[in-house]
Amino acid sequence: MSDIKFGITLYSFSTEYIHEKLDLEGVLKKVKDMGYKGIEIIPAQMAPEYPYLSDEWIEELKGLLVKYELEPVCWSAYIDMGIRSDRDLTEQEIIQYTVNDMIYAKKAGFPMVRTQHAISPEIFRKMIPFCKQLDMKLTIEMHHPHHPEVPVWKEFFEIMKGEGKGYLGYVIDFSIYQTMPHKLYLDQALEYGCRPEKLDEIIEMHKKGGDMEAIENGDYNSIEKHTAEEMFGKFSAPARIDQIKDTIDCCFYIHGKFYYLDNSEHDPCIPFEELIPTIRNAGFKGYIASEYEGHHFDETIDSEEQLTHFIELNTKILDAIQD
Image 1 (cartoon, rainbow, N blue to C red):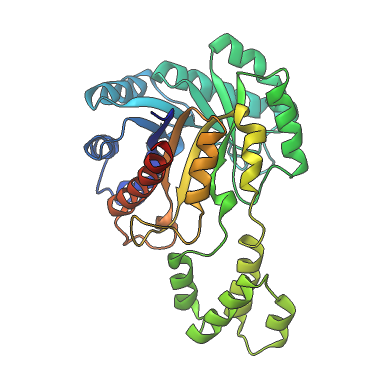
Image 2: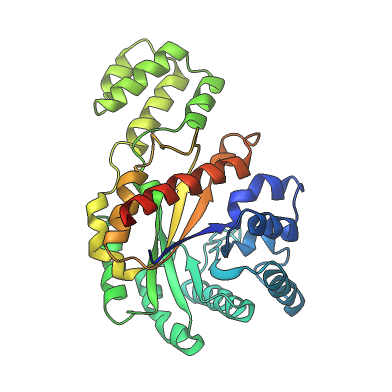
């Protein structure tokens, strides 16, 4: 039996929530009906009073989690550096907002807060006493374009493995392993003005490593040049999967990011067949959250269908390596 469990971030149902097809309770009921147990919530999206939450809202959330037999896993905080128009947040303000989120998460029964890399290594270190006092874990998401070789992440890992061990950690986001643009990205490029044959040429160039000079000097319109530049930059240097073993002891949680799946057999963009076995063999114990983000590109796609493909694909991979 594997120690890996598949949960879900409620962010996966952003389209349904934003367009008021589902309210918070509707999302939680949908999650329960799909068979999920562990959940992540982003209160900046689903708590109307955020960043200052009432006890009434917290109690409502706790009641819904009990009603639908769901396990609170991760509270995803948001550091809004632009909350003021005249300046960024100060270090003390970032600390206070983060502590506030930890207190609200604790009240709601969540054992872990996920923050963002806007929190510096210096501030991250200063959160250790608060984590210990509240008995809460604080994690940072490693999201594209970041990866373990980025200098600031080496500082974060030193803190996680040192004085912050057990309390400070990180969340792997599968976006850092994406090697190819997904279907919805390519469809959007066509919609914006890429010619089909030129987009095919750009994709072939990308497979060979990308050649921006050929694009700049070739017969490509401005949209095609922009698409090529973005594609070559975003999908050409994925993080190394074999590095997972070096920091898995600091990984408290994982975002199973994906954008579009035609079926439950394979994702041509993110190498789940290599990722899932590597994560399991490295000794990861905990939740991988299903995180569908195709809604950023096409809101007409059915979120539930996509999530079904995702969980079937990854359950199949996990079951195969256990046999």
